[in-house]
Image 1 (cartoon, each protein chain N blue to C red):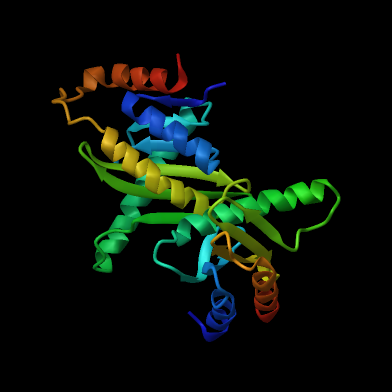
Image 2 (tube, one colour):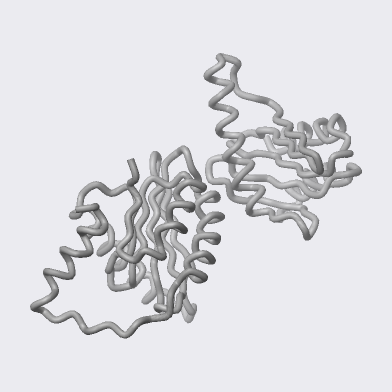
Length: 156
Length: 116
C-alpha cells in the first residue's frame, strides 16, 4: 500500500526515494509555519497536524537559541531514542524555507537518514517550481483549504 | 582525532591498496575517526557500511552462527572490509581490488583490540 502522499506533487518522487533509501518510518515535509506539503507513514490526520505543529515549534525554538549564540542557524537536530530517533532539518528552496521531520527506527540509522537527506534536499531544490502568486487564505476559506490538504495527504 | 584512534587507523592505511580507514559508530552510522583519501566519501561509507554490518549481523544470528567477526565485500574495482570492535564501534576499510586483504584483516583486528 502506498503511504507517501503529497499536497504539492513535485515533492512526491524525491520523498518516496528518500523513504526507500533511508528506511525511515515516518516523514513530513512542511513549511516553517507547519503547513504540510507531503507525508509518509502517517495514518491519521490528527497525528500529521500534531507532528507538523510540534516540528515547526522545535525549529522555531532552536532558531531562537541559535540567535542567542550568534549562530546563523542550526542545520539539523537529532534525538536518539531506544527504538526510534527523530531528525529535523530545514533547507532553502525557491518557495522559501522548508522543514523535514523524519522518524526512523532500529532498521535505519542517524547516518543513513543524514546521508539520504542531502539527496532529498538537492532533489527538492531542483524540482521546486517557481513560486506562483497565491491568493491569501481568508478565514472563510481556511477550513476548506485545510480539508483539501488533508484530503490530498490521506487520499480522501 | 585522539592519538589512540589515529594510531589504530594509521596501521591500516599503511597497507598498499588501502584508500582509507574509518572508525564508525555501528548503531548510528556516524564517523568517529577517519583517515581517508580525498576521493572517498566518508559519510556515505560510514552510514552504508554500518547499515550493511547491522543487516549481516542479523542474518548471521538468524542462521544461528553468532555475530560476524569479519565482513569482506569484493567488487570489480574495490574492496570494503568491516571488523566489529568493542562498544559497538566498527573498523571499516576501503581499498582497491589489489589490496592485500589478509594483511588488512590482521591490522584491523589489531586496531579493534587496541580500542578495547
